[in-house]
Length: 306
Length: 306
Image: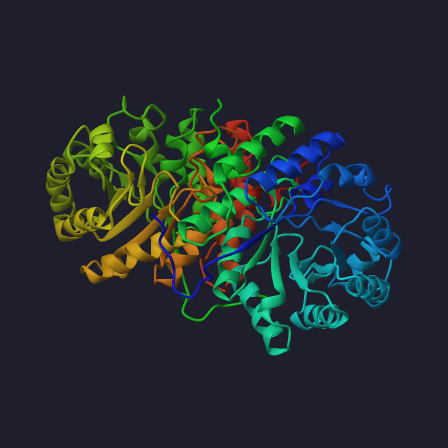
Protein backbone atom coordinates (compact mmCIF):
# COMPACT_ATOMS: atom_id res chain seq x y z
CA UNK A 1 0.00 0.00 0.00
CA UNK A 2 1.56 3.30 -1.05
CA UNK A 3 1.88 6.27 1.29
CA UNK A 4 1.80 9.41 -0.90
CA UNK A 5 3.31 12.66 0.35
CA UNK A 6 1.49 15.88 -0.56
CA UNK A 7 3.47 18.07 -2.92
CA UNK A 8 5.40 15.29 -4.62
CA UNK A 9 4.81 14.64 -8.33
CA UNK A 10 2.22 12.03 -9.35
CA UNK A 11 4.52 10.61 -12.00
CA UNK A 12 8.29 10.47 -12.48
CA UNK A 13 10.15 9.72 -15.69
CA UNK A 14 13.21 7.59 -15.08
CA UNK A 15 16.05 8.34 -17.47
CA UNK A 16 17.82 4.98 -17.49
CA UNK A 17 21.55 5.41 -18.01
CA UNK A 18 22.78 1.86 -17.36
CA UNK A 19 23.71 0.90 -20.93
CA UNK A 20 25.70 4.12 -21.40
CA UNK A 21 26.87 5.71 -18.13
CA UNK A 22 26.79 2.36 -16.37
CA UNK A 23 28.64 0.14 -18.84
CA UNK A 24 31.06 2.93 -19.75
CA UNK A 25 32.41 2.78 -16.20
CA UNK A 26 32.56 -1.00 -15.86
CA UNK A 27 35.87 -2.77 -16.29
CA UNK A 28 34.35 -5.75 -18.08
CA UNK A 29 33.61 -5.22 -21.76
CA UNK A 30 30.20 -6.52 -22.66
CA UNK A 31 29.51 -8.11 -26.08
CA UNK A 32 27.37 -6.01 -28.42
CA UNK A 33 24.58 -8.60 -28.54
CA UNK A 34 24.34 -8.60 -24.75
CA UNK A 35 24.11 -4.80 -24.73
CA UNK A 36 21.24 -4.93 -27.24
CA UNK A 37 19.44 -7.53 -25.15
CA UNK A 38 20.03 -5.34 -22.08
CA UNK A 39 18.34 -2.34 -23.72
CA UNK A 40 15.46 -4.52 -24.93
CA UNK A 41 14.93 -6.00 -21.47
CA UNK A 42 15.01 -2.54 -19.87
CA UNK A 43 12.35 -1.35 -22.31
CA UNK A 44 10.29 -4.47 -21.63
CA UNK A 45 10.49 -3.67 -17.91
CA UNK A 46 8.69 -0.40 -18.66
CA UNK A 47 11.51 2.13 -18.92
CA UNK A 48 10.59 4.73 -21.54
CA UNK A 49 13.97 6.47 -21.79
CA UNK A 50 17.04 4.29 -22.11
CA UNK A 51 20.32 6.02 -22.90
CA UNK A 52 21.75 3.46 -25.26
CA UNK A 53 25.37 4.28 -26.05
CA UNK A 54 27.85 6.99 -26.88
CA UNK A 55 29.17 8.21 -30.21
CA UNK A 56 32.41 9.57 -28.82
CA UNK A 57 35.67 8.60 -30.49
CA UNK A 58 36.09 4.84 -29.87
CA UNK A 59 39.51 5.34 -28.29
CA UNK A 60 38.04 7.58 -25.57
CA UNK A 61 35.56 5.05 -24.24
CA UNK A 62 36.57 1.58 -25.39
CA UNK A 63 33.63 -0.04 -23.60
CA UNK A 64 31.22 1.75 -25.97
CA UNK A 65 33.35 1.58 -29.13
CA UNK A 66 30.69 -0.62 -30.75
CA UNK A 67 28.02 2.14 -30.94
CA UNK A 68 27.80 1.79 -34.74
CA UNK A 69 27.17 -1.94 -34.44
CA UNK A 70 24.86 -1.67 -31.44
CA UNK A 71 22.48 1.08 -32.47
CA UNK A 72 20.97 -0.74 -35.49
CA UNK A 73 20.40 -3.83 -33.35
CA UNK A 74 18.09 -1.85 -31.07
CA UNK A 75 15.43 -1.41 -33.77
CA UNK A 76 12.33 0.64 -33.23
CA UNK A 77 10.91 0.36 -29.72
CA UNK A 78 7.50 2.08 -29.73
CA UNK A 79 7.13 4.62 -26.93
CA UNK A 80 10.78 4.30 -25.92
CA UNK A 81 13.37 7.05 -26.36
CA UNK A 82 16.91 5.84 -26.99
CA UNK A 83 19.14 8.88 -26.53
CA UNK A 84 22.81 8.59 -27.38
CA UNK A 85 25.69 10.70 -26.19
CA UNK A 86 27.44 12.79 -28.83
CA UNK A 87 30.48 14.94 -28.04
CA UNK A 88 30.60 17.04 -31.22
CA UNK A 89 29.29 17.45 -34.76
CA UNK A 90 31.13 14.37 -35.97
CA UNK A 91 29.39 12.32 -33.28
CA UNK A 92 26.04 13.89 -34.19
CA UNK A 93 26.54 12.88 -37.82
CA UNK A 94 27.40 9.31 -36.90
CA UNK A 95 24.35 9.07 -34.64
CA UNK A 96 21.82 10.66 -37.00
CA UNK A 97 23.12 8.60 -39.94
CA UNK A 98 21.84 5.60 -37.99
CA UNK A 99 18.51 7.27 -37.27
CA UNK A 100 19.02 8.56 -33.72
CA UNK A 101 16.22 10.99 -32.76
CA UNK A 102 17.43 11.90 -29.27
CA UNK A 103 20.91 12.96 -28.24
CA UNK A 104 22.81 14.20 -25.22
CA UNK A 105 25.84 16.46 -24.87
CA UNK A 106 28.09 16.20 -21.85
CA UNK A 107 29.09 19.53 -20.29
CA UNK A 108 30.82 20.44 -17.06
CA UNK A 109 30.14 23.05 -14.43
CA UNK A 110 33.82 23.23 -13.50
CA UNK A 111 36.89 24.27 -15.46
CA UNK A 112 39.07 21.42 -14.21
CA UNK A 113 36.68 18.69 -15.25
CA UNK A 114 35.99 20.41 -18.60
CA UNK A 115 39.72 20.41 -19.25
CA UNK A 116 40.22 16.82 -18.12
CA UNK A 117 37.16 15.37 -19.79
CA UNK A 118 36.88 17.50 -22.93
CA UNK A 119 40.31 19.09 -23.14
CA UNK A 120 38.61 22.49 -23.31
CA UNK A 121 37.57 25.36 -21.07
CA UNK A 122 33.91 25.48 -20.10
CA UNK A 123 33.30 28.24 -22.66
CA UNK A 124 35.15 26.34 -25.38
CA UNK A 125 33.03 23.28 -24.68
CA UNK A 126 29.86 25.36 -24.87
CA UNK A 127 31.11 26.72 -28.21
CA UNK A 128 31.65 23.14 -29.36
CA UNK A 129 28.11 22.16 -28.33
CA UNK A 130 26.42 25.18 -29.94
CA UNK A 131 26.38 23.86 -33.53
CA UNK A 132 25.62 20.33 -32.31
CA UNK A 133 22.54 21.52 -30.46
CA UNK A 134 21.57 23.91 -33.26
CA UNK A 135 21.74 21.28 -35.99
CA UNK A 136 19.97 18.69 -33.86
CA UNK A 137 17.12 21.06 -33.00
CA UNK A 138 16.79 22.09 -36.66
CA UNK A 139 16.29 18.40 -37.46
CA UNK A 140 13.68 17.99 -34.72
CA UNK A 141 16.01 15.91 -32.59
CA UNK A 142 15.56 16.08 -28.83
CA UNK A 143 18.63 17.32 -26.95
CA UNK A 144 19.61 16.67 -23.35
CA UNK A 145 22.48 18.57 -21.79
CA UNK A 146 24.46 16.92 -19.02
CA UNK A 147 26.02 19.21 -16.50
CA UNK A 148 28.60 17.31 -14.49
CA UNK A 149 30.25 18.35 -11.21
CA UNK A 150 27.27 20.46 -10.12
CA UNK A 151 27.94 20.00 -6.39
CA UNK A 152 31.51 18.92 -5.75
CA UNK A 153 34.57 18.57 -7.94
CA UNK A 154 37.46 16.26 -7.01
CA UNK A 155 40.03 18.96 -7.83
CA UNK A 156 38.15 22.17 -7.01
CA UNK A 157 36.07 21.08 -4.00
CA UNK A 158 32.58 22.50 -3.46
CA UNK A 159 31.20 24.09 -6.63
CA UNK A 160 29.62 27.56 -6.25
CA UNK A 161 25.93 27.66 -7.20
CA UNK A 162 26.59 30.64 -9.49
CA UNK A 163 28.97 28.60 -11.62
CA UNK A 164 26.36 25.89 -12.18
CA UNK A 165 23.69 28.48 -12.95
CA UNK A 166 25.87 30.15 -15.59
CA UNK A 167 26.48 26.93 -17.55
CA UNK A 168 22.90 25.73 -17.08
CA UNK A 169 21.48 28.99 -18.41
CA UNK A 170 23.77 28.86 -21.41
CA UNK A 171 22.85 25.26 -22.29
CA UNK A 172 19.19 26.16 -21.85
CA UNK A 173 19.56 29.20 -24.14
CA UNK A 174 21.35 27.07 -26.73
CA UNK A 175 18.18 24.99 -26.98
CA UNK A 176 18.60 21.94 -24.75
CA UNK A 177 15.21 20.39 -24.05
CA UNK A 178 16.41 18.98 -20.76
CA UNK A 179 19.33 19.59 -18.42
CA UNK A 180 20.61 16.84 -16.18
CA UNK A 181 22.33 18.14 -13.04
CA UNK A 182 25.05 15.67 -12.13
CA UNK A 183 26.54 15.00 -8.71
CA UNK A 184 29.40 13.22 -10.41
CA UNK A 185 31.40 12.46 -7.27
CA UNK A 186 28.41 11.86 -5.00
CA UNK A 187 29.19 14.42 -2.31
CA UNK A 188 25.90 16.35 -2.45
CA UNK A 189 23.44 16.38 0.45
CA UNK A 190 19.72 17.26 0.38
CA UNK A 191 20.05 20.92 1.39
CA UNK A 192 22.58 21.51 -1.38
CA UNK A 193 20.23 19.98 -3.93
CA UNK A 194 17.42 22.19 -2.73
CA UNK A 195 19.62 25.30 -2.77
CA UNK A 196 20.76 24.68 -6.35
CA UNK A 197 17.24 24.01 -7.64
CA UNK A 198 15.94 27.14 -5.91
CA UNK A 199 18.76 29.25 -7.36
CA UNK A 200 18.23 27.91 -10.87
CA UNK A 201 14.54 28.72 -10.61
CA UNK A 202 15.30 32.28 -9.46
CA UNK A 203 17.70 32.70 -12.36
CA UNK A 204 15.22 31.64 -15.02
CA UNK A 205 16.05 27.96 -15.50
CA UNK A 206 12.69 26.33 -14.71
CA UNK A 207 12.45 23.05 -12.84
CA UNK A 208 10.37 21.67 -15.71
CA UNK A 209 13.49 21.36 -17.91
CA UNK A 210 15.65 19.85 -15.17
CA UNK A 211 16.60 16.29 -14.32
CA UNK A 212 18.81 15.11 -11.47
CA UNK A 213 21.65 12.64 -11.73
CA UNK A 214 22.99 11.37 -8.41
CA UNK A 215 25.83 9.04 -7.61
CA UNK A 216 25.75 6.91 -4.50
CA UNK A 217 29.41 7.24 -3.56
CA UNK A 218 28.52 8.43 -0.05
CA UNK A 219 25.10 6.76 0.08
CA UNK A 220 23.27 10.06 -0.45
CA UNK A 221 21.64 9.49 -3.85
CA UNK A 222 18.15 8.51 -2.75
CA UNK A 223 17.88 11.13 0.00
CA UNK A 224 19.00 13.73 -2.56
CA UNK A 225 16.37 12.43 -4.97
CA UNK A 226 13.69 12.87 -2.33
CA UNK A 227 14.82 16.47 -1.80
CA UNK A 228 14.66 17.05 -5.57
CA UNK A 229 11.15 15.59 -5.83
CA UNK A 230 10.07 17.95 -3.07
CA UNK A 231 11.32 20.78 -5.30
CA UNK A 232 9.24 19.66 -8.27
CA UNK A 233 11.74 17.53 -10.20
CA UNK A 234 9.96 14.90 -12.33
CA UNK A 235 12.86 13.35 -14.26
CA UNK A 236 15.42 11.28 -12.38
CA UNK A 237 18.48 9.56 -13.84
CA UNK A 238 19.30 6.10 -12.56
CA UNK A 239 21.27 3.05 -13.60
CA UNK A 240 19.79 -0.44 -13.59
CA UNK A 241 21.37 -2.46 -10.81
CA UNK A 242 23.56 0.51 -9.85
CA UNK A 243 25.82 -0.28 -12.82
CA UNK A 244 28.82 1.95 -13.15
CA UNK A 245 30.44 1.47 -9.79
CA UNK A 246 32.03 -1.60 -8.39
CA UNK A 247 30.58 -2.18 -4.91
CA UNK A 248 33.95 -3.25 -3.51
CA UNK A 249 36.27 -0.60 -4.85
CA UNK A 250 37.20 2.49 -2.93
CA UNK A 251 36.54 4.51 -6.06
CA UNK A 252 32.98 3.24 -6.20
CA UNK A 253 31.15 6.01 -7.97
CA UNK A 254 28.05 4.05 -8.83
CA UNK A 255 24.95 5.72 -10.08
CA UNK A 256 21.76 5.64 -8.08
CA UNK A 257 20.36 2.15 -8.70
CA UNK A 258 17.11 2.24 -10.67
CA UNK A 259 15.62 -0.47 -8.46
CA UNK A 260 16.28 1.44 -5.22
CA UNK A 261 14.64 4.47 -6.84
CA UNK A 262 11.62 2.49 -8.04
CA UNK A 263 11.18 0.94 -4.58
CA UNK A 264 10.95 4.42 -3.07
CA UNK A 265 8.67 5.81 -5.79
CA UNK A 266 6.32 2.82 -5.54
CA UNK A 267 6.12 3.31 -1.78
CA UNK A 268 5.27 6.96 -2.33
CA UNK A 269 2.58 6.04 -4.86
CA UNK A 270 4.46 7.81 -7.65
CA UNK A 271 3.85 6.27 -11.06
CA UNK A 272 6.89 5.18 -13.13
CA UNK A 273 5.48 2.52 -15.43
CA UNK A 274 8.29 0.20 -14.37
CA UNK A 275 7.81 -3.45 -13.41
CA UNK A 276 10.28 -3.81 -10.54
CA UNK A 277 10.45 -7.60 -10.76
CA UNK A 278 11.35 -7.58 -14.46
CA UNK A 279 13.85 -4.79 -13.89
CA UNK A 280 15.61 -6.52 -10.99
CA UNK A 281 15.75 -9.77 -12.95
CA UNK A 282 17.41 -7.85 -15.79
CA UNK A 283 20.00 -6.40 -13.43
CA UNK A 284 20.70 -9.81 -11.89
CA UNK A 285 21.21 -11.17 -15.38
CA UNK A 286 23.60 -8.33 -16.24
CA UNK A 287 25.47 -8.80 -12.93
CA UNK A 288 26.06 -12.41 -13.95
CA UNK A 289 27.44 -11.24 -17.31
CA UNK A 290 29.76 -8.88 -15.43
CA UNK A 291 30.74 -11.64 -13.02
CA UNK A 292 29.87 -9.85 -9.78
CA UNK A 293 26.87 -9.07 -7.58
CA UNK A 294 24.82 -5.97 -8.29
CA UNK A 295 25.60 -2.98 -6.07
CA UNK A 296 21.85 -2.28 -5.83
CA UNK A 297 20.54 -3.18 -2.40
CA UNK A 298 17.06 -3.75 -3.79
CA UNK A 299 18.36 -6.10 -6.48
CA UNK A 300 20.18 -8.12 -3.83
CA UNK A 301 17.17 -8.14 -1.52
CA UNK A 302 14.86 -9.31 -4.31
CA UNK A 303 17.29 -11.81 -5.75
CA UNK A 304 15.93 -15.37 -5.59
CA UNK A 305 19.45 -16.83 -5.37
CA UNK A 306 21.85 -17.87 -2.58
CA UNK B 1 29.99 24.41 3.43
CA UNK B 2 26.73 23.16 4.89
CA UNK B 3 23.35 23.83 3.29
CA UNK B 4 20.76 23.87 6.09
CA UNK B 5 17.11 23.19 5.35
CA UNK B 6 14.53 25.22 7.30
CA UNK B 7 12.48 23.13 9.67
CA UNK B 8 15.09 20.46 10.30
CA UNK B 9 16.55 20.10 13.80
CA UNK B 10 19.77 21.94 14.68
CA UNK B 11 21.18 18.92 16.43
CA UNK B 12 20.67 15.16 16.17
CA UNK B 13 21.63 12.52 18.71
CA UNK B 14 22.96 9.41 17.07
CA UNK B 15 22.14 6.24 18.97
CA UNK B 16 25.03 4.03 17.91
CA UNK B 17 23.98 0.38 17.77
CA UNK B 18 27.05 -1.18 16.13
CA UNK B 19 28.45 -3.04 19.14
CA UNK B 20 25.05 -4.57 19.96
CA UNK B 21 22.68 -4.71 16.98
CA UNK B 22 25.59 -4.75 14.54
CA UNK B 23 27.83 -7.41 16.05
CA UNK B 24 24.86 -9.53 17.10
CA UNK B 25 24.05 -10.05 13.42
CA UNK B 26 27.59 -10.69 12.21
CA UNK B 27 28.73 -14.24 11.61
CA UNK B 28 32.22 -13.66 12.93
CA UNK B 29 32.57 -13.71 16.72
CA UNK B 30 34.66 -10.80 17.91
CA UNK B 31 36.98 -11.15 20.95
CA UNK B 32 35.82 -9.31 24.07
CA UNK B 33 38.88 -7.03 24.11
CA UNK B 34 38.21 -5.96 20.54
CA UNK B 35 34.59 -5.16 21.43
CA UNK B 36 35.77 -2.97 24.33
CA UNK B 37 38.21 -1.16 22.07
CA UNK B 38 35.40 -0.70 19.52
CA UNK B 39 33.17 1.00 22.10
CA UNK B 40 36.05 3.18 23.30
CA UNK B 41 36.92 4.24 19.76
CA UNK B 42 33.27 5.05 19.01
CA UNK B 43 33.10 7.24 22.12
CA UNK B 44 36.39 8.90 21.14
CA UNK B 45 34.88 9.68 17.73
CA UNK B 46 32.22 11.72 19.53
CA UNK B 47 29.30 9.35 19.81
CA UNK B 48 27.47 10.03 23.07
CA UNK B 49 25.18 6.99 23.09
CA UNK B 50 26.72 3.62 22.30
CA UNK B 51 24.58 0.55 22.82
CA UNK B 52 27.21 -1.75 24.24
CA UNK B 53 25.87 -5.28 24.50
CA UNK B 54 22.91 -7.45 25.44
CA UNK B 55 22.12 -9.30 28.65
CA UNK B 56 19.91 -11.90 27.02
CA UNK B 57 20.52 -15.54 27.79
CA UNK B 58 23.92 -16.39 26.28
CA UNK B 59 22.50 -19.25 24.23
CA UNK B 60 20.11 -16.88 22.41
CA UNK B 61 22.77 -14.56 21.02
CA UNK B 62 26.14 -16.34 21.16
CA UNK B 63 27.93 -13.32 19.63
CA UNK B 64 27.12 -11.30 22.77
CA UNK B 65 27.46 -14.09 25.34
CA UNK B 66 30.41 -12.21 26.88
CA UNK B 67 28.31 -9.29 28.21
CA UNK B 68 29.42 -9.97 31.79
CA UNK B 69 33.10 -9.87 30.78
CA UNK B 70 32.71 -6.92 28.41
CA UNK B 71 30.73 -4.44 30.46
CA UNK B 72 33.34 -3.94 33.25
CA UNK B 73 36.03 -3.37 30.58
CA UNK B 74 34.14 -0.35 29.29
CA UNK B 75 34.76 1.67 32.44
CA UNK B 76 33.28 5.09 32.99
CA UNK B 77 33.16 7.21 29.85
CA UNK B 78 32.18 10.75 30.88
CA UNK B 79 29.28 12.12 28.86
CA UNK B 80 28.66 8.79 27.14
CA UNK B 81 25.61 6.62 27.70
CA UNK B 82 26.19 2.89 27.35
CA UNK B 83 22.74 1.30 27.17
CA UNK B 84 22.46 -2.47 27.23
CA UNK B 85 19.64 -4.65 26.02
CA UNK B 86 17.80 -6.63 28.71
CA UNK B 87 14.98 -9.05 27.88
CA UNK B 88 13.54 -9.58 31.35
CA UNK B 89 14.06 -9.05 35.10
CA UNK B 90 16.90 -11.55 35.21
CA UNK B 91 18.71 -9.57 32.51
CA UNK B 92 18.03 -6.33 34.35
CA UNK B 93 19.57 -7.78 37.51
CA UNK B 94 22.68 -8.93 35.64
CA UNK B 95 23.07 -5.52 34.00
CA UNK B 96 22.50 -3.40 37.09
CA UNK B 97 24.78 -5.62 39.19
CA UNK B 98 27.54 -4.40 36.89
CA UNK B 99 26.45 -0.77 37.21
CA UNK B 100 24.44 -0.25 34.01
CA UNK B 101 22.45 3.00 34.17
CA UNK B 102 20.70 2.77 30.80
CA UNK B 103 18.80 -0.20 29.41
CA UNK B 104 16.64 -1.14 26.45
CA UNK B 105 13.83 -3.63 26.05
CA UNK B 106 13.05 -5.15 22.68
CA UNK B 107 9.38 -5.24 21.76
CA UNK B 108 7.54 -6.04 18.55
CA UNK B 109 4.65 -4.40 16.75
CA UNK B 110 3.58 -7.71 15.22
CA UNK B 111 2.36 -10.94 16.75
CA UNK B 112 4.42 -13.18 14.49
CA UNK B 113 7.71 -11.53 15.33
CA UNK B 114 6.84 -11.37 19.04
CA UNK B 115 6.22 -15.10 18.96
CA UNK B 116 9.36 -15.88 16.96
CA UNK B 117 11.68 -13.53 18.82
CA UNK B 118 10.27 -13.66 22.36
CA UNK B 119 8.10 -16.78 22.26
CA UNK B 120 5.20 -14.66 23.52
CA UNK B 121 2.23 -12.73 22.22
CA UNK B 122 2.65 -8.96 22.01
CA UNK B 123 0.60 -8.54 25.21
CA UNK B 124 2.58 -11.23 27.00
CA UNK B 125 5.82 -9.50 26.07
CA UNK B 126 4.48 -6.16 27.33
CA UNK B 127 3.57 -7.91 30.58
CA UNK B 128 7.12 -9.23 30.76
CA UNK B 129 8.54 -5.74 30.22
CA UNK B 130 6.28 -4.03 32.75
CA UNK B 131 8.24 -5.01 35.91
CA UNK B 132 11.56 -4.52 34.08
CA UNK B 133 10.67 -0.96 33.16
CA UNK B 134 9.09 -0.30 36.56
CA UNK B 135 12.11 -1.49 38.54
CA UNK B 136 14.55 0.31 36.27
CA UNK B 137 12.65 3.60 36.52
CA UNK B 138 12.42 3.26 40.31
CA UNK B 139 16.21 2.99 40.34
CA UNK B 140 16.59 6.08 38.12
CA UNK B 141 17.74 4.00 35.17
CA UNK B 142 16.96 5.30 31.69
CA UNK B 143 14.80 2.97 29.58
CA UNK B 144 14.54 2.75 25.83
CA UNK B 145 11.86 0.62 24.22
CA UNK B 146 12.53 -0.91 20.83
CA UNK B 147 9.55 -1.48 18.65
CA UNK B 148 10.50 -3.79 15.80
CA UNK B 149 8.54 -4.49 12.60
CA UNK B 150 6.88 -1.06 12.59
CA UNK B 151 6.49 -0.93 8.81
CA UNK B 152 6.70 -4.38 7.25
CA UNK B 153 6.85 -7.86 8.69
CA UNK B 154 8.32 -10.78 6.73
CA UNK B 155 5.39 -13.03 7.63
CA UNK B 156 2.52 -10.56 7.95
CA UNK B 157 3.39 -8.05 5.21
CA UNK B 158 2.63 -4.35 5.69
CA UNK B 159 1.97 -3.49 9.34
CA UNK B 160 -1.14 -1.37 10.07
CA UNK B 161 -0.33 1.98 11.70
CA UNK B 162 -2.89 1.28 14.43
CA UNK B 163 -0.99 -1.81 15.54
CA UNK B 164 2.24 0.17 15.98
CA UNK B 165 0.42 2.95 17.80
CA UNK B 166 -1.11 0.50 20.27
CA UNK B 167 2.23 -1.01 21.31
CA UNK B 168 4.02 2.37 21.27
CA UNK B 169 1.40 3.93 23.55
CA UNK B 170 1.63 1.02 25.94
CA UNK B 171 5.45 1.17 26.15
CA UNK B 172 5.22 4.92 26.63
CA UNK B 173 2.66 4.50 29.42
CA UNK B 174 4.85 1.86 31.08
CA UNK B 175 7.51 4.53 31.44
CA UNK B 176 9.95 4.19 28.54
CA UNK B 177 11.98 7.39 28.18
CA UNK B 178 12.46 6.75 24.48
CA UNK B 179 10.85 4.57 21.82
CA UNK B 180 12.83 3.42 18.81
CA UNK B 181 10.65 2.69 15.78
CA UNK B 182 12.31 -0.10 13.84
CA UNK B 183 12.03 -0.86 10.14
CA UNK B 184 13.50 -4.27 10.81
CA UNK B 185 13.23 -5.59 7.26
CA UNK B 186 13.97 -2.29 5.53
CA UNK B 187 10.84 -2.04 3.39
CA UNK B 188 9.65 1.39 4.58
CA UNK B 189 9.56 4.42 2.29
CA UNK B 190 9.46 8.10 3.27
CA UNK B 191 5.69 8.58 3.07
CA UNK B 192 5.13 5.59 5.36
CA UNK B 193 7.57 7.06 7.90
CA UNK B 194 5.75 10.35 7.80
CA UNK B 195 2.34 8.70 8.12
CA UNK B 196 3.40 6.70 11.17
CA UNK B 197 4.96 9.70 12.93
CA UNK B 198 1.88 11.80 12.24
CA UNK B 199 -0.42 9.09 13.56
CA UNK B 200 1.64 8.60 16.72
CA UNK B 201 1.54 12.33 17.35
CA UNK B 202 -2.25 12.38 16.90
CA UNK B 203 -2.58 9.48 19.32
CA UNK B 204 -0.56 11.09 22.08
CA UNK B 205 2.91 9.64 21.55
CA UNK B 206 4.97 12.81 21.07
CA UNK B 207 7.82 12.96 18.58
CA UNK B 208 10.10 14.11 21.42
CA UNK B 209 10.21 10.57 22.85
CA UNK B 210 10.71 8.88 19.48
CA UNK B 211 13.79 7.63 17.68
CA UNK B 212 13.95 5.97 14.26
CA UNK B 213 15.82 2.81 13.42
CA UNK B 214 16.14 2.08 9.70
CA UNK B 215 17.68 -0.82 7.86
CA UNK B 216 19.15 -0.34 4.43
CA UNK B 217 17.94 -3.61 2.90
CA UNK B 218 16.30 -1.78 0.00
CA UNK B 219 18.57 1.28 0.13
CA UNK B 220 15.85 3.42 1.74
CA UNK B 221 17.35 4.12 5.17
CA UNK B 222 18.77 7.58 4.57
CA UNK B 223 15.78 8.86 2.58
CA UNK B 224 13.55 7.60 5.40
CA UNK B 225 15.76 9.39 7.92
CA UNK B 226 15.37 12.64 6.00
CA UNK B 227 11.58 12.21 6.09
CA UNK B 228 11.77 11.59 9.85
CA UNK B 229 13.91 14.69 10.45
CA UNK B 230 11.34 16.71 8.53
CA UNK B 231 8.79 15.44 11.07
CA UNK B 232 10.84 16.58 14.05
CA UNK B 233 12.77 13.41 14.95
CA UNK B 234 16.05 14.26 16.71
CA UNK B 235 17.34 10.80 17.67
CA UNK B 236 18.47 8.45 14.91
CA UNK B 237 19.81 4.91 15.33
CA UNK B 238 22.74 3.89 13.15
CA UNK B 239 25.47 1.28 13.09
CA UNK B 240 29.13 2.20 12.56
CA UNK B 241 30.23 0.99 9.15
CA UNK B 242 26.76 -0.43 8.48
CA UNK B 243 27.64 -3.40 10.73
CA UNK B 244 24.99 -6.03 10.98
CA UNK B 245 24.48 -6.91 7.37
CA UNK B 246 26.85 -8.59 5.02
CA UNK B 247 27.04 -6.47 1.86
CA UNK B 248 27.13 -9.53 -0.39
CA UNK B 249 24.41 -11.69 1.04
CA UNK B 250 20.88 -11.67 -0.26
CA UNK B 251 19.64 -11.45 3.30
CA UNK B 252 21.61 -8.24 3.84
CA UNK B 253 19.62 -6.51 6.53
CA UNK B 254 22.28 -3.99 7.46
CA UNK B 255 21.51 -1.04 9.64
CA UNK B 256 21.86 2.45 8.32
CA UNK B 257 25.60 3.14 8.38
CA UNK B 258 26.51 5.84 10.89
CA UNK B 259 28.99 7.37 8.45
CA UNK B 260 26.41 7.75 5.66
CA UNK B 261 24.12 9.42 8.21
CA UNK B 262 26.85 11.75 9.49
CA UNK B 263 27.77 12.73 5.91
CA UNK B 264 24.18 13.84 5.30
CA UNK B 265 23.80 15.61 8.65
CA UNK B 266 27.10 17.48 8.17
CA UNK B 267 25.96 18.60 4.73
CA UNK B 268 22.72 19.84 6.25
CA UNK B 269 24.61 21.72 8.97
CA UNK B 270 23.06 19.55 11.68
CA UNK B 271 25.32 19.13 14.71
CA UNK B 272 26.14 15.57 15.85
CA UNK B 273 29.44 16.01 17.70
CA UNK B 274 30.91 13.18 15.62
CA UNK B 275 34.33 13.32 13.96
CA UNK B 276 33.65 11.54 10.68
CA UNK B 277 37.30 10.74 10.00
CA UNK B 278 37.81 9.04 13.37
CA UNK B 279 34.53 7.19 12.99
CA UNK B 280 35.29 5.89 9.48
CA UNK B 281 38.76 4.81 10.61
CA UNK B 282 37.14 2.86 13.44
CA UNK B 283 34.78 1.14 11.01
CA UNK B 284 37.63 0.30 8.64
CA UNK B 285 39.52 -1.20 11.58
CA UNK B 286 36.47 -3.27 12.59
CA UNK B 287 35.93 -4.38 8.97
CA UNK B 288 39.47 -5.74 9.02
CA UNK B 289 38.72 -7.64 12.22
CA UNK B 290 35.64 -9.10 10.53
CA UNK B 291 37.64 -9.91 7.42
CA UNK B 292 35.49 -8.08 4.90
CA UNK B 293 34.90 -4.57 3.52
CA UNK B 294 32.46 -2.29 5.29
CA UNK B 295 29.00 -2.07 3.70
CA UNK B 296 29.01 1.69 4.35
CA UNK B 297 29.51 3.60 1.11
CA UNK B 298 30.99 6.55 2.97
CA UNK B 299 33.50 4.32 4.76
CA UNK B 300 34.60 2.86 1.43
CA UNK B 301 34.78 6.29 -0.22
CA UNK B 302 36.88 7.70 2.63
CA UNK B 303 39.10 4.64 2.98
CA UNK B 304 42.74 5.43 2.27
CA UNK B 305 43.39 1.89 1.08
CA UNK B 306 43.32 0.04 -2.30
